[in-house]
Length: 295
Image (cartoon, rainbow, N blue to C red; front, side, top):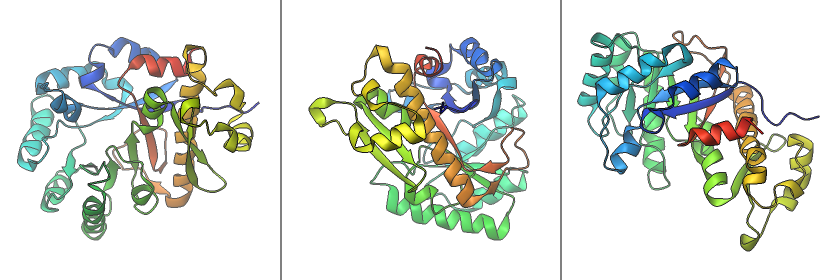
């Protein structure tokens, strides 16, 4: 029998969406089901007109500290000085070691500043979205080359990026994307990775959009152990199967990338993983994560 998902599942959670779900997160972690990293969710909060308070975020991180492999600093988009201030405040006042973020276009001098303080994992943000991709890609290449030449111990997390141009050509340690779970839940579209070809194909679960599952039936059966008939339409009865399929696809993509890049872990990382990239699935609802592992 083919196992769709390998445990623990790499998951990115955010304070903005999960601030009242610490107990449920702890339960998933303690059962060996999920391995968490966390961020503030400041970008989502900003889009919704909400504000993240640094002290509240710090308290949440402390509450989950033993269950988080790392947590991000509270970055301020477009203001590297404010992001630096938040990072130092979390460290000095709240006694939290967090992962800072540089946004597309930021001067490499800020990478130098963090590296001099012993940071060996930095997030690269502001790269998601088709409109951002060309400029952001050039900036990411420049930033990673700068680190290679001056701070070879530095590793990178790509925020909100699982596009082939970034992950298949740049040596990220990890990345996250809501696409694998989000597209399946919202739009009935599953991203299926084919380990034989190294390509991701999109399959629709909506008959009115032209169901494409049967075109990839051999891939579903042989790689994922899924009969297309069981997921040809999405609903509550097969929600768990669809979520697991989306997660299993992201895991096989991560394994393929690990074989391609063999990025060693940052020295500060104390998790089980020894090579990257890692792909963290993202969901704004803990119920979706629970549904993926509980029939």
